Length: 285
Image (cartoon, rainbow, N blue to C red; front, side):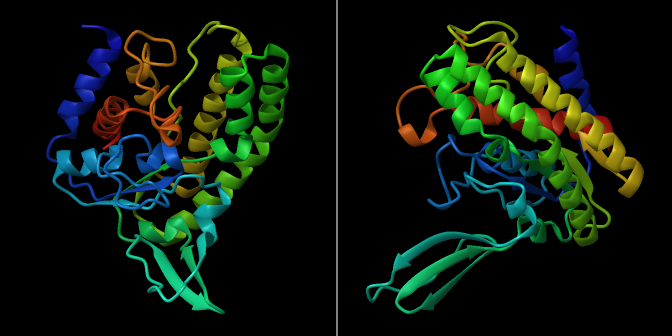
């Protein structure tokens, strides 16, 4: 058995029997985007998201408050997710943590600050920041255009913004602790779309940047755990995804089919993500 497999197995075994009521906050890589079976078409929250698999394993509850396109600010501030002309139709929503208001014939759907969903949770999983650091420009230059020069520019821009994004996450964690004083808070890294070496025309530095970002999240988790208690970095996600990035024989990333799902995890990726979260809980409970 490999070290990675042993780590995951140990976590899964240790996790059995724990009481877990979990909440997911963050962006599309937390909401289940790419897994299908969406409960709504605005946030693309999937019934197959990793957080749902955590709840199934423990027999607890799951609240998916994550939303496609979210930025760190959306954790602590309301976000207008839709504005449409009512045209005589009902202005309403059944989305988790959302309200609908009608004014001057415009139906506006507004999401509550995501952290409000964490009240009463035992565990809150946070994956956020990709939209803040500029994932789309990186994807466009590095993956779609295959332009090394523009890729380097996009990655350098993202690298320069990480410190600011980490500072915003620090503030969000402090606010989250006020709402969920007893919860364990888990910082989840993004899957590595590009792994360890050149992928076509993609510079190695694009993969190196993600490693640097993960290191910053680890440091944030350690710092905030000392300050507000029970903040963890999820170490199990990256190894379980190894060998399943772009270009792999068994990739867990959408590269064709629906344009909406491009560069998001497949159902297999979301299942693996669920196993990673469960194993992580077994190691920290």
